[in-house]
Each structure stands twice: as C-alpha cells, then as structure tokens.
Amino acid sequence: MPAPQDDALTEFTKTKMHFALALLGTLFALHPLVEKFGDQVGFEYLGVFLKVFYAYAVAAGLLALTVYFYALALLSQRAYSWMEKSGNSCYAVAVMVLPLYGGLYLSTWAAERFGQAHLAWTGPTVVPVALGLGWLLLSQVLAWRLHRRMDNQDRAAKLGQLAEQEITALDRSRELFATSHYDLSVIEAWKALEARLRRVLLLRRITPRSATPEAMINAASRAGLLSKSSLALLQELRAQWNVAISTEPLTREAAESALRAARDILATIPIEVPGKGGKLSV
Image (cartoon, rainbow, N blue to C red; front, side):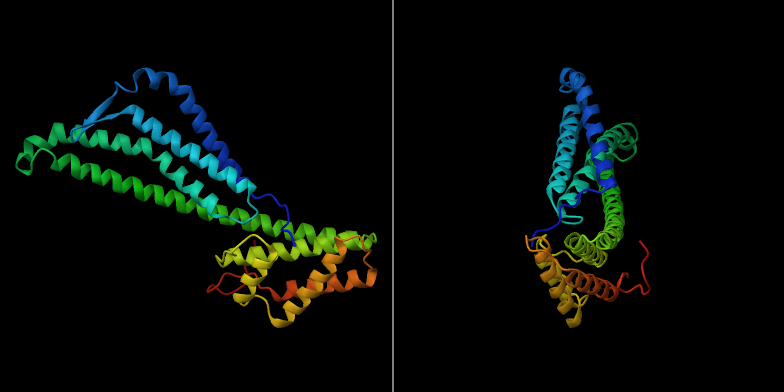
C-alpha cells in the first residue's frame, strides 16, 4: 500500500528555506568583495592568520547544506524526518559563524590590550585561548538552543498540518459518501486515519522504520496505540481500501461499513502527550 503524496514541508520549513536562500543570496552579493579582499583581511589568533574568507566559505557551505537537506525533506514522505533535523543543525551553526569569528577577534584584541600587561606570568597565549574557548562554548550553546527551538517549531507545525489533513479528509469522506462516490469516500477515510496515526506517533516521538503504512501501523501497535479490536477493524478498512483503488466497484454497504470502522478506530486512538495526562488540542 503506497504512502499518500502529502506535502512533506510545512509552511515553517518553507520559511526557513527562504531565509537560508536569502542569506546565500547575500553572501553571493558579497562575493566580489570577499574575492578581492578576503585573503588579505583577517586577524592572527594563536599564531594562525584567520582570513575573512574562511568565515565566508564555512557560512556559505553550511547554508548550502541547509538548503540541500530541506530539499531532500521535500522529497520525503516522513513527518519531521532526520533531513529536516540535519538542515536545522546546519542552519543554526551557519548563523553562529560570524559571531564566533567576531568573538575570536575580540578575544585577541582584548588579550593584546589588557591581558598581557597584567597577566604576563600566565604566558602569552593563556588569555586569548581562554577567551576563545569561552566564545566557542557560548556560540555552541546558542546554536544548540536555536536548533532545539527550530526542532520544536517544526514538530508543532507538522502536528498542526496533520490535524488539518485529518479534519479535511473526514469532511471530504462524508461529502463523497453523500454524493454516492463510495470508493473515494473510503480513500479519504483512510487518509484521515493515517494522518491521526502519524500525528500520535509524532507526539510520542516515535519514528517508524520507513514511510510505508505497514511500518506506521506496526509502530503504533508496538506503542500500544492500537488494540486487537482496532487492528481487526483496520484490516477491514484496508480491505475495502484495496477495493476502492481497484477497478472493482465498491457497494454502498461496503463503504458504509468501512467508514464506520474508520470512525471506531479514530475513537480509540488518544491524542495526548505521554506523561502529561489529558487531551492535547492541536
């Protein structure tokens, strides 16, 4: 059974991609200046001359990887995949490159101006090393916080998208059944059920082994989200779904039974955060 061809990217992910492309465009506009002065402009840190070109190249490379990972996520059918997470990591580190470079420069400048005269006994490299490590640690903490915030926003956006897909599919299923399009109504009912399962798995931070419905059902069953009776109803719905996508006509009675099974299954799948108690409204 193939997975549905839903949009893999939420609006939030598309917005992040636009920002990454905008930053890449800015770096591209600065390329003539960097190409002309990048090898000459810089500062010396612990005996190594750090060129401006190095920061430019690292930031551009990380932003390009960000867009690449988000583009891979566009081709994926999995909710909140590792590709989006990798893109978030590259994005977070990329925006911290220039602050880190600036921090290293300030460390060197402060050590030369204030540290050496008062801390000569510590040696000529202790002050810039200590300040540099401090800036490096601070930049990593900020990058981690940014990455975590983006991950949380990704999850919230995907949860909202799945909730909207479920409601839309249920409404379309009822409308199609009322207009005697029984096969299409069963297909929409399955879409609603799959959106609910993906939503609950995402809430529990459970990632199926693959994007196929079979893998999703197995993951939900192992997590205790589907009882034996629900699995039996699911098999009934799946059998009617197979008929609906074939050339064989689906009867009104079969479609009505399938829709009833879908409603009963949805009623048994809780939408709640594990350990929190209570229903989650998304």
